[in-house]
Image 1 (tube, rainbow, N blue to C red):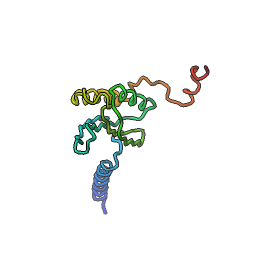
Image 2: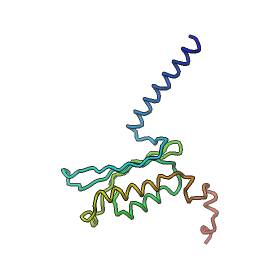
Image 3: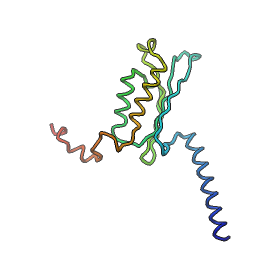
Length: 149
């Protein structure tokens, strides 16, 4: 086999592997290289579960990610019905099933809730270079003066 044929074979093999990887990542919910946020409204009235939102995000993993996410969901008065979180190679993808709290379900406009949730998740999914979190090492966090008091 000459060099050109070998190179062509390698290129075809790499394209095939990329296609298989894309198929697997759809099924396994693996993180992608791009930051993204999606919000879907799932109507489950036939099961009497009320309104349900499927929210997903993909971004770089960082220490403050889950506390920001928890605060955002709490501020929007949402309840987490299910979560699927995958981390791979410093990237994280989270898919959440959310519904409005029982006491706020009646007076919630679904479109405004979806917009607000998109804003919250977009802020969370920003790149870590613009993050306010400055200490990256567990050792540095351990020796902060607040831990000595």
